[in-house]
Amino acid sequence: MEDVVAELKKLIDFKDTLEAGDIALLAAEEPQMLAFAVVKEISRDFSRKDEWWHVSMHMLSVPLQPMTWTLRMDQMCGQEIFTMGGKKRFMAPVRIPYESTGPGPLPDLRKDRKGAKGKTKLRVVK
Image (cartoon, rainbow, N blue to C red; front, side, top):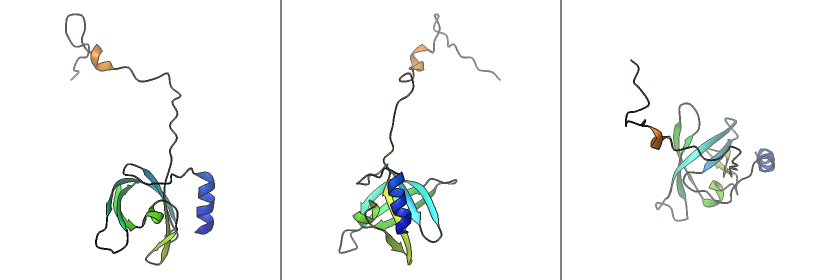
């Protein structure tokens, strides 16, 4: 798992912190898996003495798979490989670059729906 994580860190730009709405990369040793998940919510686990967090997420698969992992901050932010059921796991938030290559924002089509006489330009076809 250490070699896989080292290779992933060369290929993917990971963020230092995890927030709700982030996309995270999940890796598992057994069963062998690499997948993405969107983080839905992060909430404190007050039943533990140390700082542990419930990370609720949806694995981006068909169908979406909801799951919650209870992790420490270093585990959920890609600073530490951890185990679940004796099997190694890794999780890290991904920085996704957004570059606009198009001509600009889409036009607001709502303001141009009606014709000159106030009638809708679109018609219903049955």
